[in-house]
Length: 342
Image (cartoon, rainbow, N blue to C red; front, side):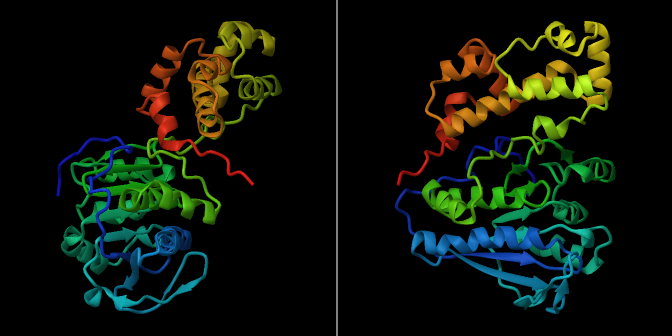
């Protein structure tokens, strides 16, 4: 099982001939009491949409619980599985959702994962489903992520796992782990794109009114969410100014003057109240702004680099490689979504 095939979320797991016709892939979704309902239904809706989008069977989605009994989700919904785990079909993709039920799971569930999961071609977790994979030893020696609020505990409880708290999903070999809740939709869309192509995944994304845009190594938080909101009004105003004017002079001296503080005092206060240095905050805002322009416009890279404050396309390229692990040109190739014409 172990063995790293690179950490880039942009690299497909395997290449298939362009015109190869594949039989329906079985997706088995694990169910248990106090599962997070959206961890289940979000990816299931993506996989279910592949059939209409491709004109084929797409995926054969099945659900299973320990004894085949109905489960109650953490939000109070009741889900009725198709199978007991012992009778479930061997899946191509095993999907393990998260939720409160992963905190103190039934030992039989972990035992089943330990013995049965390695037979799946792909193992996928959503949110704290990674905790179940970790308990079963399926993440040992791998890079993984989970909901940001549980990354530290996952790393503490399982030091053999390289826990990355930043990206929305991580692929390592045939195992993929995703961040909180809706990141499971992003990962499911990436799997559909791998299996059936970008056009199919985009059709599903449009039907669900979600974006086929977020690469796996995109941060779980935007810069505004990753940073705390400053308590003092001058610092809050500076945060807003940075967001609205990424192409302006955003040096510490300039921002300090706007806050009417000395540069040294401003830098210390900003980091103390937001949790990020001014430079790091500016860097994240600029990358996000540039990323949106690459996704939504046809503006040239040189023009975008100037409007987002990088000055040169090479400076923006270095920032993208550092933050997203890909160049602006490659990012646009993968995630540009032209607006539909009427």
